[in-house]
Image (cartoon, rainbow, N blue to C red; front, side, top):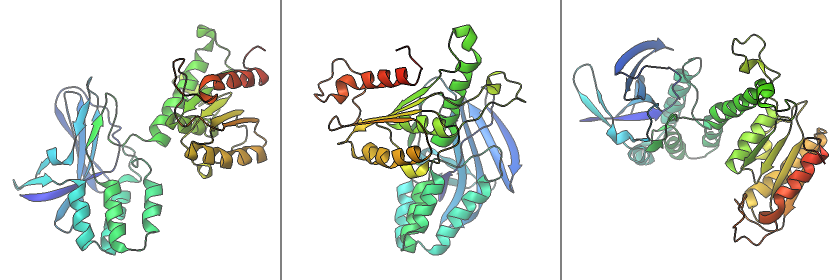
Length: 334
């Protein structure tokens, strides 16, 4: 039985029905097939070139079922038109092969095949963090390491998809869009829900802090041409609170009109404390109203827990500092 490599290249944006059916379409020279069964949709296309003994297929999986769904490449078998069955290999097998045979040509093949199939295709989007991974790979010295790194970044690995998830859910694409939609929704229905549309903010903890930071730096005043009334509402939060956020300061550009920002973490939480130390000067230079609290201790993930065993003041009083700040910026009554 021949083998094939599955590239987890894209998230599916095609909406299909619940009954099993195959839909075909062509884009960027590739012929795609989609199959939906019991709410789980799989889309694939055969890539034009081989990678050593591997044929390569582009695959995306979206779980529209009510329960979780686990996918792994070893579960896939592709039946060619000539009847030959090709069993998909694990990412580990591909990386091991490239550690022995990898070359610069393999790097070019994987990157160009991926980008040529995704860019310009309205149904697809690049998988999570691809551009940053690509830049990191190209900075490596060894061509075999480059090939191994590219394969490990793009190959489909075992993943558990909860209801509504796809195999390439992205923070900057999907999570940010979710946050923007939430802000628009509350603002659009502010009168109905008796909410002040000028006092709608976002707060994010840890990885959620990245989403909050993105929402605070990437927003618009609404889409006046949209048929959906929610989309006509603005997505700019009126304030943003980042609590021990999982961010990199250099990843953000401070836009004009950025809302006031509240930053908080513990000094012994190395990643967030370093990130806030780099982010605050950027906000200060741009004139963004900002308040920063870095506690000496507290670690990561102290959250809001009245039964916490964490002895740090950060775990017992940080919300008081947030309340004071919300009062100072006029969101809460003093």
